[in-house]
Image (cartoon, rainbow over all chains, first blue to last red; front, side, top):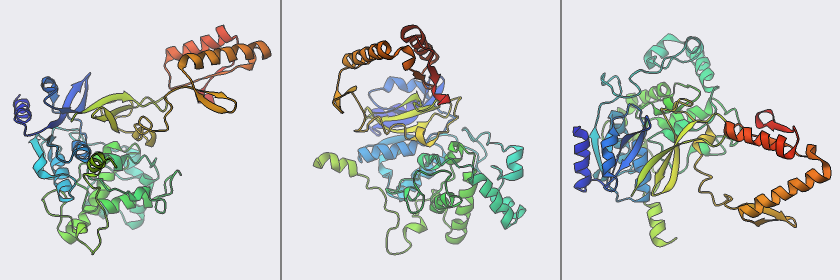
Length: 279
Length: 135
């Protein structure tokens, strides 16, 4: 396979120190870091239709070693996430090399090679009382009035088990301090979670950030249509600022509003410094 | 720098959700759900998401402790098991086998559960064996 040769070349020519791809392990396609030391494992490399947040792994690696050169199997969603991480200084584009593969269906692209190939279907009860996964934001807004929409979203939010999975899996969630862990906003250790504030905090923070990869929706054990929620939020950002997260190397409008930096990004070389200064 | 993903099973409850440990340079860095696992299909609860935290916790017990004179003392496994066995013997002799109860778990395997009830009935000699799901 050409992709494997390409990756082998990248590793052998020292263009990347580690290549993040997928390999088959007892029938499970799982992410794996290919390096010079385990080059023979490269033959097991697969283009998985399971999607994992490889760019999040890249940020973890970069936190430990800011100079590491990383190669990544990239679908469109991975590339949008990488673009966004570049603009927020979480990754250095000079240290990232991508090998492009087919991606999930989106309004922009119909061909797909991932778990979104068959979008999740909503059951009858969900369609009747909640929010259909596959409804378009405009259709949803047009079909129901304010009260109806609130009731439907509240039905969805009330199912939340506060697992923080949406935040944990999100490739563009990198803040040092998370509002969802702030005791004044979200009371720690209590269930059920306060609705709709919990979900609205996250939705507000996804404005100008969410790259519409849908990983949060896949990871949600309560089947809340998060992708649709963040799509609606991003629609506003797109209308007001003409900004589409991850589609260009433009900075988010929220990174330049006001004099203070509201979201302090994690210092990339924190652990590196800690190790070298012996602090 | 080395980065690999190790599949495992969540160690908290009896569901047995599939997890992947993100291991960087031999140290577990985070936990993510295993998407192809038949039990959880790439979803986890909050305990599963934080599975890696106790592994590297400085508060984690690495040796057995025996309480002597009101405080815990480090012990070897042989000492701890020996101590437990002798205490079982003493209590059984003094108060009878029904003074001991065994609680098994959904988290351990069928075989371990079988062994535990066998141990309770045949070695200790009581029917006081129950399951954590009925706690």
